[in-house]
Image (cartoon, rainbow over all chains, first blue to last red; front, side, top):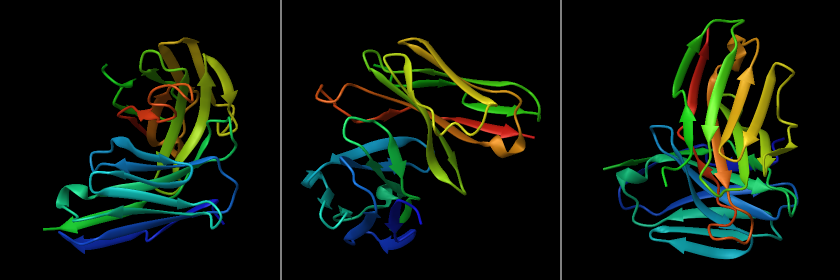
Length: 110
Length: 117
């Protein structure tokens, strides 16, 4: 079993829909990252969370440390949000190693 | 800043050849990471450096892989000899010290797409 599991693996939605991507992990962590990989392959860091919630534009990320679960939400989705979203956890406080989920491929149709 | 720079962007080589991938991190960043991405295994950390010193190389697949960071502005990942199963996209990323501006956000380079025939 992978240490970081994402669901769903693939998600197709219509423009304007509210999107939720989930990430569960089985190990103790000090932080969780959400990354976005564009169709061209570039990777961008969206959020780093250790507790609570963060918001940036239409993107919201939440984490529940006790339940070992995080969600990434996209409000008013747009075709330009189509990408692979990757969850990654930092395992040990003070260390910088990240362990990645397999990613969720999101497609937003106009 | 130009961001993390990687070269080459694409590399096609034959099995048995030596491959060298290069990375220039963002100026002032203390950490440098090498990742490999494949369809089967997703993103995996190969090795990371702090202040040019290798900290964790547990992800390096085998002795055919080596990485160096001779100074704060340059790192190489070398595969010798290369094999078809090494075909992947190799990303370099860098980050600042925890607590500094930008903190632990990792900034990724554009990647090197390697194909070993």
